[in-house]
Length: 82
Image 1 (spheres, helix red, strand yellow):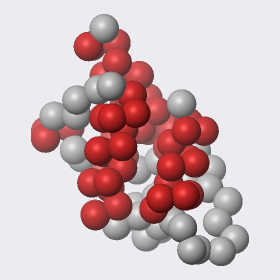
Image 2 (cartoon, one colour):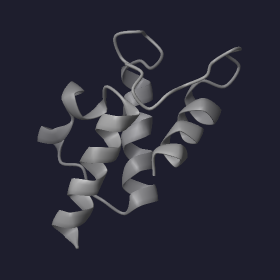
Image 3 (cartoon, one colour):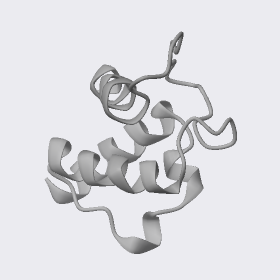
Image 4 (cartoon, helix red, strand yellow):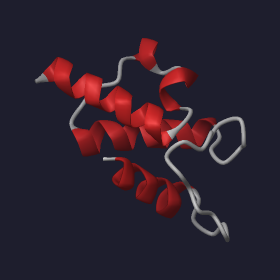
């Protein structure tokens, strides 16, 4: 799951940026790698790719700061909908 998320971020959100070697624990928001529009695109991707629904109240920084955070969140959402 983490590798899919990283690949999406690198190819769709960071395309054109050189020398980006994204890791699962890298802070995407405070480093400025992804802005608010990028987060919205990422949320749409997560919902589609992993067949989950992310409620508005869950669209907070704590779930989307790192790929590790996103992966943990998606796993929880998948278990709730299963």
